[in-house]
Amino acid sequence: MASSGGEWSAEQIDDYEALISTTDVELLKKAWRNEKASPEILPFEEALVKRAKEQIQLMEETVDDFEESGHDPLIVSLYQMDLDRVQFLLRSYLRVRLQKIEKFMFYIWKTDTYRNRLSIEEEKFTERCIRDMGKHLEETVLSKMPDNYQSVLKQSVISEEDDMVPEPQLDTFVVAKCERTTRPLYLDGSRQSAGFDSRDDHFQMVPGDLCILRYRPFQEELTSGNISLV
Amino acid sequence: MAGQSDPHISLFSAEEVEFMAEDELIEIVPNLRMDPLNFICGDFGPFLPQIATQVPFWLAVALKKRGKCAIRPPQWMSVENLTQVLERERESQGAFQVLPFHYVEISRLLFDHARDDIPDMYMVRSLIEDIRDVRIHKVETSLEKFSGTSAVKIPNLSAMEVNIIRPFVGRALQAFYKHDNPEKIPDVDRPSSAQTRVANNEPRRPLRR
Image 1: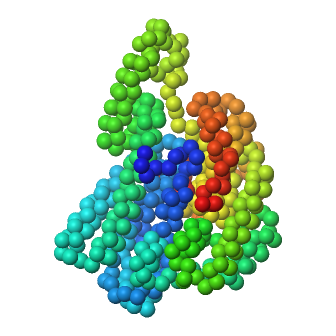
Image 2: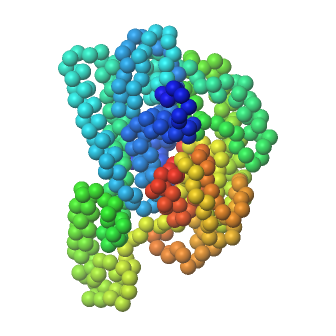
Image 3: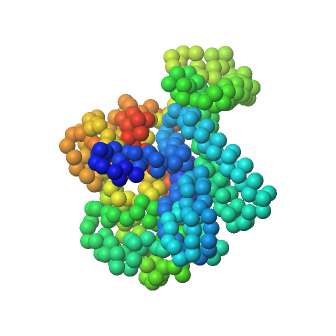
């Protein structure tokens, strides 16, 4: 690779090599870790999930062919293991998202940013969830409450906001690994530099750094791929 | 739900952390002839007797279980290196020595499935256990230095160590943050005291398995 001539900078070669050596499995694993660790629902990895599904289907056909053609059972079982691992990742990724939707369905539905992060299937799921949960609350509790207390979203009619809707807690702390140098962040408060590493008033991560972070100030760094959660 | 860890106790289960470690590459020496394997997670092989090749850990373990290869323990897993790491780990109070992110899981997998491939296996195992204990103790004492802050660097901490301290440290830092900024966090969706207790009492559980 790129051994001829010095037209490429070291950085470009690094980038290129990282790109061709990163498989969809790695990307899916990263998406799965991020989704599991972040308090809010992240944008749906539509293209990645589509590619993963196609590869799984292809591999399933290959394994079937191998079995029929009487291939070495050892080889068949190894391919099956590879298939199982990818399927686990994909299933777990989708399930983590469904769990988040179940938890924050009302909030996701009324917040455009979050709603736009859902896949079409997830949107349908959210709608059904809301309908069923609303119906359930209605039948079991709300219909037996006084008139002023019958809203699914509010404690009573005098509540100004939807105060019975669980929201994701963005001020939870997550553990992050740095993939690309982050831009320096000026964190609020005066005591950011406690812990192992003392710094000035700004905070910056370089590749390989491992940190415990408050999620909110680092949201953008995560969606831009500068950091990933572990 | 099947295949999911309980998010209240630990974000990733010990099995899930191990799953991630199994994608790390390791060198094996096969004793069979086999065509290259074109997996979804990448292409490996061809496999020729006595010719070393790199494969992911799960594949190495699968072949090893069937007696089809020998696993070459990674370089850092030598008695000399581990003795040095342990020494330096004991000397420096604040910093952690550089070890692979998945060193706990990798060594466990090797001890479980490839003990005959590790020279001085008992020595290596006890060294790694000592290193792990020293590091965990260091983590615990370092926690005292944490206070209200939004970001803490934890250089060289490994995956399993991160997973162990996450429930406690995460909540502790969140509590600091909440007390510093009382107006910012509404008191809804608080974790129940039962969950906190589980997280506090059993932070070491996954390691002792």
